Length: 103
Image (cartoon, rainbow, N blue to C red; front, side):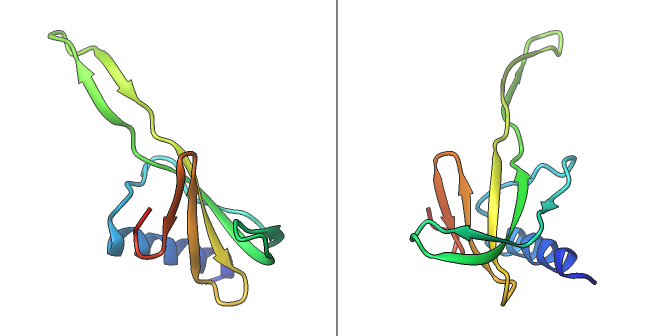
């Protein structure tokens, strides 16, 4: 298993363990190449970023089965330490999810 596959597997395990965010299974996880990036604490570090999309929610249908209301899932980015391959946090449009699942 290469590094990117290992990181994606770590993220999938985190999803199952913490269960605070839903993953859209039809859109594959995408692990970017290692890069030097400034983190939210202002420090610069080598990291891997995995992009993914959350499941769409609140789908409502009319009496004919047509969709009348739909909230599309959002794209999120999981930050992994390039040395340890451990999840650091997940960034989403309205904040961050910590490793323990808190916001």
